[in-house]
Image (tube, rainbow, N blue to C red; front, top):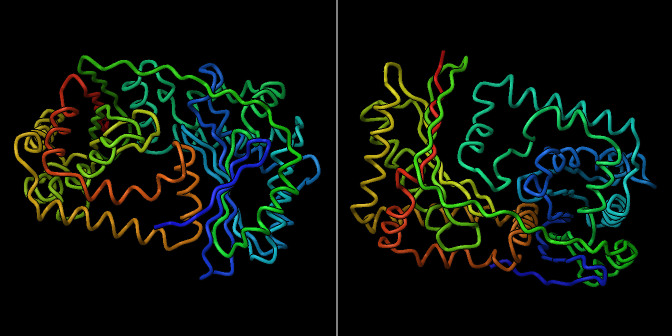
Length: 411
């Protein structure tokens, strides 16, 4: 059970305080409710670009890193299709440095052409390294284009194409900042050696003066139900031919998501899992094979992906995977197998929540999905899932007309 308290400033900033006195450190996490899904389809990659711009200096603080390092702190950030998360850790005695730094860049960045040009070049190089020059680097871009026709999950966080970042100008950037970077579109999570009264006073001092920007929650287009099998074949200079199969599943808010997560563990969590034992170890059709859920907050994907052994065809590999999926649809998962998977999942969850920074990030994650209180419902949901539910959900999602398949052929 993760115990925390919730508060709200008049400008709309949500504040979540989670004490952990086993550490002398504090994690300071600011989560903005903006990700790649909130972008203009003609200007993608902006959420990720902002992750970089936010370290380029704010109005009153030209260098973010130096004062934090002098205070004994460290920082980082990440962007997903659903959120942008900035976090730092600092000794409890120096926590006000975190409030000073993060409030100033929430108030206003030091927008300059030089800073924009520098960060654009960094992001463009990252795009090339990640998508164009790395083996299998364009898989997710291809998969998203194939699986999504309407919802903005159809592009990856890095963006659709380099030109969108190349064309970004100061007006575009300022517009994006003032539309999404605001106290009424963010949550501040404080975890570790925190004194609640002191944290609230500091939040009032540093964040309360930032004006509410009346951020409107965007209504995103819902992805239509997929009604026919989709397939795309590409050829690339990679070591092994790979197969990717994506099935649409529910949003992160629904029970079905947790059921799908368990199904993915039954299939591929560890060397005793079904896919490894049957298709990697026994039949030697794959050199590696995995099943996982995308974890997206809106309706996402269940992915089965694997690299094929030499002389194994896409057709052989596809049929073998379908055979395993159909077994889940026809036969109940045994009680011992299901209990083993649930225990492993619970152990991983409990272990992750022993770290104050992990807890802060998980609270931020759930606050962005809906409410941070969801963090304490995960184990109850997993414990209550039955073999019947696994079978029914497998029957629902593992259908040919719900499948998008990418054949990634080695030259």
